[in-house]
Amino acid sequence: MRKPCCDKQDTNKGAWSKQEDQKLIDYIRKNGEGCWRTLPQAAGLLRCGKSCRLRWINYLRPDLKRGNFAEDEEDLIIKLHALLGNRWSLIAGRLPGRTDNEVKNYWNSHLRRKLMSMGIDPNNHRLSRNFSLPHRNPETMTGKAMSFGIKSIHNCDQESDAASCLENDSSAGLPDLNLDLAISVSPPSPSNNVKEEQRLVKEPKMLGDIEFGSSPPGTLPLFR
DNA sequence: AACTTCGCCAACCGCGTGGCT
DNA sequence: TAGCCACGCGGTTGGCGAAGT
Image 1 (cartoon, protein in one colour):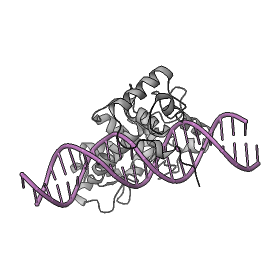
Image 2: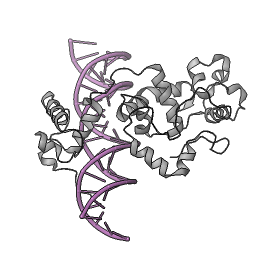
Image 3: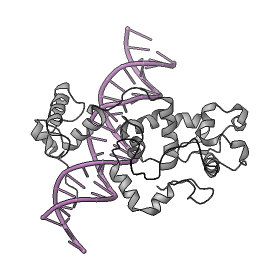
Image 4: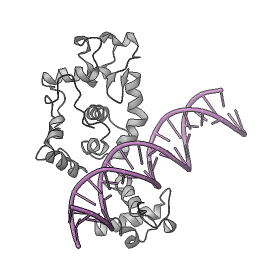
């Protein structure tokens, strides 16, 4: 039986008050992030360390970009999700100012539905079986759907799917998908997933899986 | 106006992992 | 090598406001 992360009897739960937020901000400004377990006591907060960490990362961090997602951010999330699956922290790491929680919520509340309405299964980014036929006509597809990697659908046979079409595109170089997913020396943004990327470096097999062109033909480079 | 349903999002929970001893 | 601890991640929940009836 795992020990609870903190003494639950003495901790607050639920929404954070302004005073609590301020205490946390003040403490981190003064002492920096880290040592979340001891932070609550040191900062005078009746919260568990986990809760403090989450509050800071998802809401209080000064570099957070709040508000609606831009269209290019949406596109990027969808493309990254097709490649990485539900690796929200990795996806968020490619979106400066966005948190994994924010990306996950946005995916679940907006993007999933959006893809489904376009006849794409959000779980595997394949065209779903019940995809209504008129939409199969590339002429009637929305520009959005086209940009999600199925623009060359007319070149794929009926049993094909968005993923393999995307793959086909990748064989042509995928010029519009400059995601820099191969582990680079300098990631495009200060990511909160450095460890994860280091892990990928340590695991060349997995790394290979997310490099375009290295997956078996007809498979989506998912490694989950 | 009152009630119900739906959708969003902040927060919680449990588990996996890496570092340290 | 094993065990413990702290951290980080992803799935899930619950509260609240908006929309619908």
